[in-house]
Each structure stands twice: as C-alpha cells, then as structure tokens.
Image (cartoon, rainbow, N blue to C red):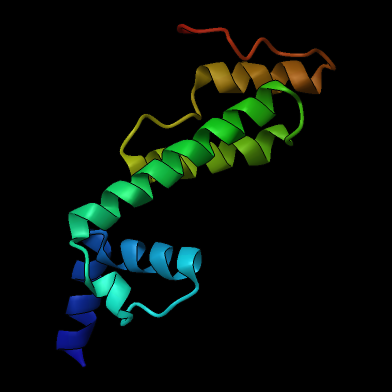
Length: 115
C-alpha cells in the first residue's frame, strides 16, 4: 500500500495525473485507450497547456466584458496560472479592484503596476 501511495504522490508532483485527468475529461475516453497511449507525455502536455492558455484568454475576455463574476473569474485565473507556472493573479492590484467593486465603481482591468 505504501508503494502505491508513493507512486500516486510522484504522479501528482510530475503532472502525470493532471495530464491523464485532462485527457479523460476532454476526450471522454479512458487513459488506457490506445489513442492516449500512442502519443508521448510531452505531446499531451503541450496540448493540455494550449487548452489552458486558450481557456485563460476566454476568462480574461469575459472578465473585461463584465460577463463573469469577478471573484470566481480571478480564482479560475489563479488556478490556471498555478498549473501553467505563471504568476498568480491575486495581488495588491486585484485587491484594489475588489475594493473598487465593493464601492460600486468599475475597476480598470487594464491597469498595471504596483499599488
């Protein structure tokens, strides 16, 4: 049991689990499918990252257009950024935007820099 648990931890640390889960969710087929096994991990990882980058663009566009609840949208961005290894969204500027929203003002989502 300990060996299996250790393997599961390694899978999580190396993104093996995330790639398999992404593939199963996207293609609705098991990870044992010959199609999945026919390509290398780097090929699947590139495709997974492409999907996540595209998803991030959609979230940013929907936030800017006011089509997405701000807190949930920023949390989704943080989650994607963490997986992609990019900077987290939650920072002083985001906190400023949240304060502006609470005050009834529309924040400038194009604003950059330290607050």
